[in-house]
Image (cartoon, rainbow, N blue to C red; front, top):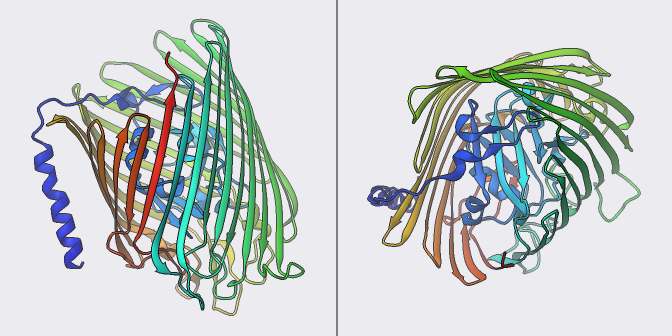
Length: 624
């Protein structure tokens, strides 16, 4: 580690004892956040699982403008970006693959059945996000299949008053673009607009964003457009409805993204449409019923030669339609949650073919706080898939309240991941699917201790996860295409810690520290003669330190990350934001990759060095 980084870390650490001198600790409302489940409603302070929450206020402090840039600051989350400004990225949790993480939007499954490379193609501008919930561990009991290593749930804002939001930003490295024969400065810019209309019986919100970059390397220019609408209707005190519609257009040069070095002239265009309709009915004081339908449509146009569309072009059209019915019944001795869901997936593709499959599942769970200091959640998910038949996935979590601050938790769960259409049927010169694949099955157990008091929330835990029939893309040598196989057992032992400390006024400044560390020790049954496409890039050590200080007008934040992968590649990244607020306006300056570190997150794609951004945000709120 060079001297500049050492000096910076020592300076950041030196702030901690100063921050601890405050007398008045601000109460942290995160305790009262209801974790977004589809049946049982559990406050964060009473949940027994390993959950981390990032609120809109936390997001606003970070030197980030896209979801892809925000997620790496959540403990245990590994985001491998192929470019800045939300171009394209894969996300995983606790050493799993990018296919093993379930993505949800307001509790709706939005993972892509073609390939998880599209999972973060979400038509949700950052300005519309209220919070992000990361639920770690095998979670079929809660969310159904494909939550093999955990789930990420993005919760959008609810309208509390009429408002208008405008946010523009732009930046550059002030360096010439790599791999270019001509001069050119790398830059990127974007704008996000939002409007909300509040009435007592109904509320509406509309957001639009556009981002564009010329790319820091040859043929990595990108642009994306997102539009998101959400509405709510209160029919009466016992019946409500909400609906959502979103669209995303994402076009980017894909030089080196999937098949380097031959794909230097490749390009990809992805379009995604999301829609949902849900109602909530309080039938009696004890019984509630919540039906919901949703649809996700995705088009993927991959052009290996962007200037010659007559050859090596892949076009994919997939659709996932879901129906759900969730219920909650409260009794004097505990709460029952019952639910049913069906998901119908179809694809029509030039090199995957035409396929469809159906998945049906039923949930049952019970939660009680009537066992003295013990809180117990127990349940199971029964699943039927038209390709793989019946499976049952049980789970349990328990929490023992030592006192009003400390709690011991233990949870165990199981889950399954069904191979994607790409895993099963892809036909390309360099990648060939395997229709004989079996699903992956996981079992995980975790023990932890939690602490909550005033401005401090802390968690430290150990987990053991075993995945049977683990799927990996491998080949014998560089002359053969990659093909997926069930490789046997994948075992991960891990330790994760996280502490969030919010401090009250010290000379009119409020301070916050978020410190986290993850250690993962994986072991896989693999053939040493085979070349793996993805697995050597999993994280082994991950640490973060985010410091922020705010007062009436000024705010400063320092966001630091250290990642070391099992291949022993490591890098330290440090970002900063300085902002000033005057009335409805906020202006800020971001400094990213302060130490100009050369690093790679995915494949052989170098990420940008040091670069700078300026932004202006306007927020108008109607008087109530």
